[in-house]
Image (tube, rainbow, N blue to C red; front, side):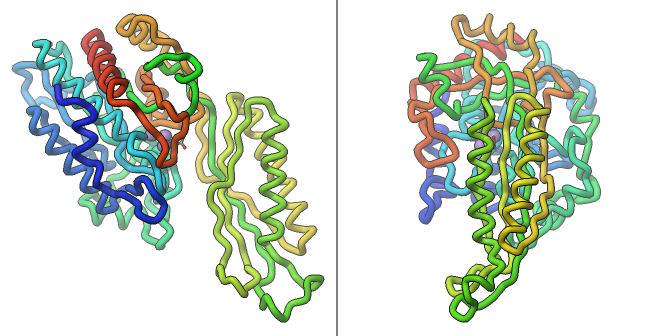
Length: 408
Ligand code: GLV
Ligand code: MN
Ligand code: MN
Ligand code: MN
């Protein structure tokens, strides 16, 4: 078996962010494209057959011995594992790549063990899992499953105004063919995603690995606060309609509201004053709100409350506020039988819910899906400080191989 750390070492120079620290590997950037080529090369080295589907998802196939590749049906109901290679801005080395590298290492291990798959096995790489370029997380799996309207997806824009349709075309996809792909969906018999744990769950449990139980509901909303752009030196304080001041009140209100709601999480991690000059009172502020809660009705009422407070704060400053929804995913409980199989394959692994979103959560509506989490000793993620010890990474690959062997 190639060790997971060796595999990850071979990509450690790709997409380093010298300004933010860590990695910035947005979908279809040179860095992410390099990683996709790396994946294709590693998959071919293992004798896997590579396909890119119409939504830009990579599939590396280990077919059943003697299966006729021209007969598409031989891949129906396959066992599928994998993750993503894109990152948040200034992200860690493991969120995404760990699951891909562990899947490749697990294939090595299964081959070393002489396993002959009784059904096809595929390793997948999903594009734009983080939504850090086009705003919608899990865009690849949402397109595949029809969870996003393809027209909406085509018109998503990155911060430079490039549409997803344009980016897709530039990368060899036909924008007209984006969207629900029943043929690909039929191929997913079961989906297992291994991922770095993104909080302190496994530190608290003192375990190297856990079986995912659920993903809490989450969504993204964009708040636009509009005021009056003006001169910083000539505009008296009482004459201003400054959307930045309203934004500051809104951020404080969001924290207060979430903190008063058990289990809620709400974050403003991105804010854009327009035009954005030191000596300019902004005319508009756009800010993005990430809200999560295990109970979907509570998420909805949090959004309503935050919207109301934003309108009040904006009005107080002589501004207006408008909220638009960018994406929402309800709480997902992973397939009970698949969780049981993973527990049997990895005796003693505890169950663990997560507050992080994953493609497995989107796929769960279409095929039995489950996850494995590997310990992150810093408890920090979406940051350069995210970490996994080499031994834990290799243990994760062995656990994944054990699980896949049981399921094949
Ligand atoms: C993705 O990693 C998310 O949970 O936001
Ligand atoms: Mn991830
Ligand atoms: Mn992530
Ligand atoms: Mn994620």
